Length: 293
Image (tube, rainbow, N blue to C red):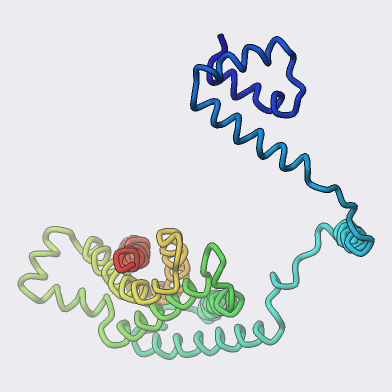
């Protein structure tokens, strides 16, 4: 006797009339004792009969012509061409370059008041400025390129906006109270002296560098997280990477008077703080939105 699974495999052949007589008898015998399979076979048979009675109509000449033209246009299109929407328009590219250079100029002015450039040669300063300009232009290009693409999987506009805002806050903090100034203040305070005895100078720069990146990046990412509907962790990681790259020139310029170990500790702290603050901010905002809905 057939099983239910075997009957389901034979149903398409049965309702279409292509099943062998011996198998038809075995199937009907199973249906007499299985109400569930009988109901399913009856429903499929009704659908098949309905489709069999559907009148066959040839497509209109207009529809055939439209389909043929669409297929030919797709076949003749260059396979390696870049879609027009994937290229940043000239006007937006000009805005990205202008804003990037303007931000670079403002950042250099801020850093000139927070750090001394005496230990750097002119080529090094020019190279740092060129790198900073390229990174800022890239960030603004992502911002302008993503305009209007709210349905995309990754909202690069929100990532660029969060990264640029956080860099601005970090530069203001560096001008007001830099990591170096905070470390020097801690060295002369009782609690700071205890901290230095525990972690040392490199450890202090690691901790403060992480906090200077984590706190503002968390706040800005949480605020910009409203623009992110999906994949908050991925958005946070991309934002952290962008912010870390944008802050590297500033950290490098402030480390001119410090040892290599201190500079590397500061960079490591900024890296850890960036990749902790941004994903956490985007994730918490996404969780808050899901709870409210």
